[in-house]
Length: 66
View (cartoon, one colour):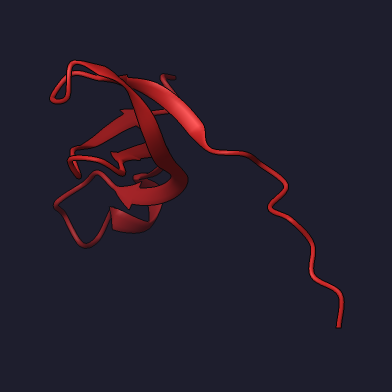
């Protein structure tokens, strides 16, 4: 069975905790913003989640600023 290399190389970003540019794992998550269970299905928003692979610091940024 043939294997394929990862489509995306390591993503490097500035890490405030490390104070330098380090590799990060970047994902997109759908998070619920409303604490009210009745409106929870209408308050989901995409967030970009970036985790430093050196120190483990995680940063979440809302992608839809409407």
